[in-house]
Length: 304
Image (cartoon, rainbow, N blue to C red; front, side, top):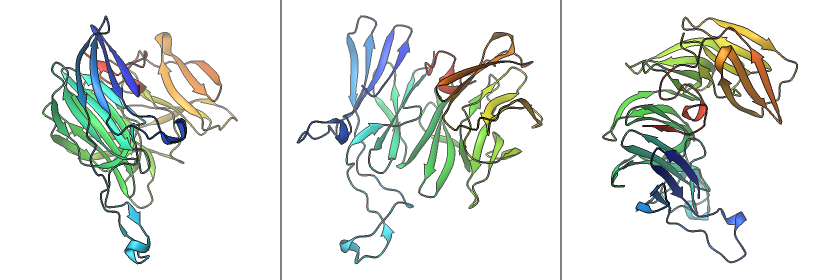
C-alpha cells in the first residue's frame, strides 16, 4: 500500500511495489502499480492498473560507454521500480482521482487522472520530476515539477487538460476563492524563494524574500494571511504581502512538518521531535480545497 484516502462511503488506495532495499535477496520489485477503490466493508469496486511507461526528462542527463562518455539527454527507459510520488501521491476531488507515480531511481514520474466512479483513466501528464500536488477545486488539481532544470506548478481541470502554468514551485495553499499562494522558489537560475501568489493569468505576484527553501507547509486564514515556519521564526504574510514575525526562536532546525491553524488563533508547528503550540491573533482557517498541508487538519486529501 503506497497511499490511501478515506471517502465518505469507503476509501481509495494506490498500490506500488516495494523499493529494492526493502525486498528479500533475489526478489524483484513489482512494476505494475494500480489504484483501487473499496467500499466501507472492503469490497473492491474497481482496480485500475497503472502503466508508467518509459520515462525521461530533457534535464535528465547520462554519460556512459554507450555515449562515448559524452553527456547527453537520457533516453526514455522503463522505470527501475515504480513508487508513489512523495508529496500528494493520492488526491480525490469531486469525481476525479489524481494519483502520482514515479521511477524510484530518477524521480521522474506522471500524474494519472481517474474517474472516481468507474476507475477509467481520464488523462495522464507528461513525464516530469515529481514534486508537490494539491487540490485546486472540484475536479481540479495543482501538479508540481521540480528538478533536472524543471520548476513549475500546473493546474489541471476535470477533463485532465492543463489550464494554467506558473514558473515556480512550492507548498501552495488554495482558499475558498481559489486564490493560490505559498512559499515558492522561482524558475530563474538563482531560484530565489519568496511568498508568491499565483494569478489566474499565469502571472506571479512576488511577496517577501525568504533566505532559503526550507519552510513548513503553510496555512492560510480567512483574511488571506499565510502563516509558516522559516529560519527559526513563525512568519505571517498578509493579503497585501506584508510580513511580520509572530515568534522567534534560536532553534533553526529544518526538520519541519505542517503548520496547523486551530481555533482561537492557535498555531501548532512540528519541529523535529517537538510540537510547538503558539497563541496568535490570526483568524480561523480559511475555507477552501487546500487551506493547509494535505488539504485539511485531518490530513485526508479529499474534497467531496
